[in-house]
Length: 522
Image 1 (tube, rainbow, N blue to C red):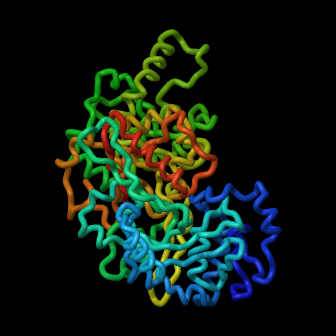
Image 2: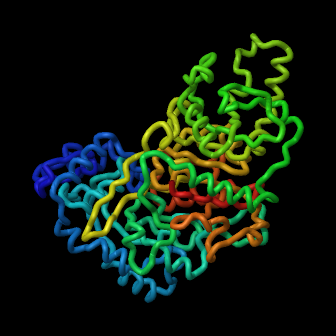
């Protein structure tokens, strides 16, 4: 089954005889006209893995494996050891130096040719890694110019120019897919409402990638590396990040609780009941997509809550908190015409203070996965997606997913006005994606931009990154797209998509200054 006579088809997402054409391709001419394939260079880079895909890859790993001729000639370990890639913003402008740079980089890039002719051998471990990070929808058989290229890991995070040169030289190397047209040169995002700060360097190469295990890296290139994780989240990493904020950012990230907040109700996650707000309590707030799913009467006591809410109770306990605020339970949800005059007044008051509830929360859980509240939190009640890992010449290589901002932009959560407000106002948040394997959850806190110089640094790294090695990052405005901004149907890695993400991050900073995005690997 895993012999060179079989290939992994990136269009059918299954094993096929190498001698037969892919049934979905038909002919090149019909493929160009087909609606089955996405617009040229606009593909979905989130790469969700189906259960069949995961089963197939595990079966292939149990078979004898060796590098195919193409991958052996390429030698991926050399790319990790010898390549010296630069971010787009540091590539020389001078034409001769520009050309020389790409001549030096070329031996460490793997051109994939026309995708319809790409043969990924099932018995080759590196072919399987490429298959895992290949877009699962929107790619076209007639697409040319795709290549696997090395890049420094820190460029996945906007604002990387704040890193010290010494830190950048120790950055891990990733291998990711890039189309020849997806080169951005020195794109910077201005910080809104800030006249004194320079623009922030945009992130790039944010899609899925191939990493080398930290213990196997060359030349001490370990900073900002990914890592293999367990199927279920260890929330100790997120708790550590929040503890750093609570310890160091009291002046910036802690809101004074107004008296009207004392009229709210909270879920006591230990007693499993809704109680009046305990004065001075630190609580967790949930930001999620209802999707028409309402808890039934008595669901809290009976433990029959929608899965996202139930998982949030679990996470609240894991974060060392006792109280949780969820609108479906803490605001009266009975039909309006059945409420008394007093109940109507109370509900009106609660709805009017939603901004305070999220602003004063110790942390907001942001549930990005699924279309409704039954989706649950990935890594809490259901396993996270498979990270493919392979051994090549005694060293471990594995895959990581696209950055969380890409999944956030494609989520149902990002389309709701309520959640837009919740994300904007939360002082701290833990984002719980559905696909983000090695970077779940993502802890975020938001000191104002004027306070950057006073925040604790470690070894020239980003603020609050001292406990995050081997991966930390800075993101400007980790918030949803502003409403009314035109969005494309499919999100890929084209310059237009990059510009949109950069625009979203810049606008997200409006009114609050910059945000520091802390990425504990759990």
